[in-house]
Image (cartoon, rainbow, N blue to C red; front, top):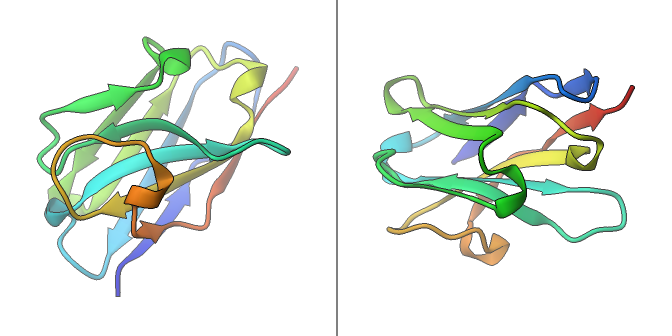
Length: 124
């Protein structure tokens, strides 16, 4: 049974930083590509970033390029999302998700397993 658990969310002022963690369990993380998604109230779930199984390729949505960094440590079964220069529009529940497959995609329907989410609030 694959399970993902996010942590690291919280309240931060504009311009601040947070590091989200996603702990993966049940099967080897190295078999799965990982995506980070977010959903703000009243909005659709949005793909923020994703990383291939070995970590060699990454993708970022334009709104977070240069501010967010995705990384993974397959030995520790963890995936991270470092978020810098946070803006109020980054406020959302952030989810990590896993998929079997190659390549990069941020379409939610391509992902089979989801965490429960962690709240990120950017406000002064």
